[in-house]
Length: 370
Image 1 (cartoon, rainbow, N blue to C red):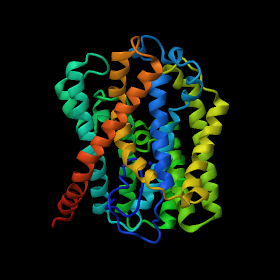
Image 2 (cartoon, helix red, strand yellow; image 1 turned 90 degrees about the vertical axis):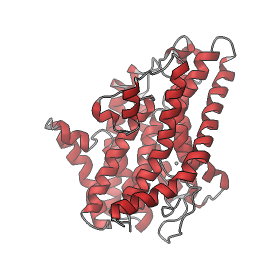
Image 3 (cartoon, rainbow, N blue to C red; image 1 turned 180 degrees about the horizontal axis):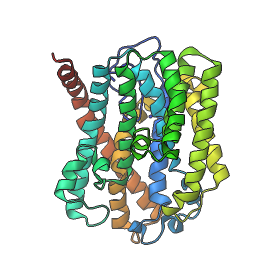
Image 4 (spheres, helix red, strand yellow; image 1 turned 30 degrees about the vertical axis):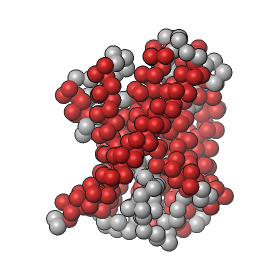
């Protein structure tokens, strides 16, 4: 879903060389699961949300398909669970400068490319999101949410959530080496403290603790502890706690927020079952029966996931806006998906691979003062 130890996350590139470590096995199935999550989000955006590019709600264009894809937004929640798993894996045995360097070099090259490509697209296409030049520059920082600046692509909101999660892990690293006890305490207490911040109207603390999404990240962290050290009562209870909290968040979201984006209602029962399935899939792909899969195509899938997530929005909508009403809708859907995959491959091959290692080394040297 690299020169880093064999880790996988929403922003990892599994085709980069890595140094094997006995407690960090290759988890190819997790790469494939990441791509599945990205494709679920893509399908949701193209076939289930209310947007003008088809000329009417997408659910009218795909009445049968949208019965399934209306739940595709849960691909984001799956990303967060996977991220909790792999970022804790990354933090084990790593210094704070090394962790920061790995995150910056992983996130920014592909992201910068996606922002610049999107701005170039908007220069001649009057659909989709339009931002002025200054706002486009702010987008290059990935901090635009903090300044209330419009994302050049709608899906970019999750990157701000991820950055805050990385900040929390950075604080954990700054306090000392990541150990089982510290990681366990963090994953158990974080979602509870985040909810207390919300209940007490502590807006800044609630934002920093990413209250709505904390159970997904924390649950993923505990799944990593289960993977690393085997069954343990507190770990299992913690996973159960975070699954319950995630189900609560997801069902409330399905009832209150999801209807603002789609005229296709989401069943709370289905959402609850899917959230439980998300955690079960991450466990199956990391510790369970799927963990032994090692097909090469899964590695390629993992490499394309992050750039695909970054570019699929505006570029797919451009194809839909240009061709809908003139070409069969299923062909348009296939072309929009194909263009997104092609751009994802280009960004990975021409930007991520050549820039990742030099940037990581440069950032680490700067942070280490040598």
